[in-house]
Length: 185
Image (cartoon, rainbow, N blue to C red; front, side, top):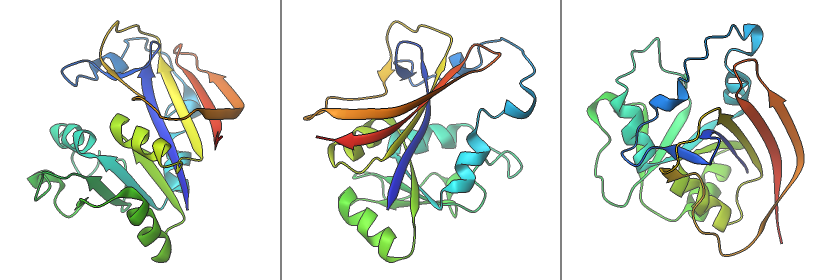
């Protein structure tokens, strides 16, 4: 099963402020991006058939209180990893399911069920998938802002992860997106 990341960071590599804030993603640089307005998200989301996110990511998503029209994931199967929670937030019930086992078993189960491409989201979850050598592709979009401190995209890794076939796109709003294939030594 292919596992891919599509995520935004600050230019210094943070996915959120220390208190979980992501307002900095709206840099105020109001530029018409035309056909690139979603910076490739819709094409990416159309390529995946399930999503695995961390608890923190799910809680942040719940805090947005998205209307059905704002929901960006369509009918995508979404699984949130949590050892602590017994149920998803009320506004995500029916949209997100919880999983408390190990990620290798989850990926194997999804693959047996016919899923082929998973979207992996959330810093700790991405790091866990890298540790398990499950990520095959990274798309990282850097916002034109330095936070100085915050929640980093990557946690500590026990082995080197090699990135190759870099493809970079600079957008008119000064965001820069880099796509990589991932391999493990």
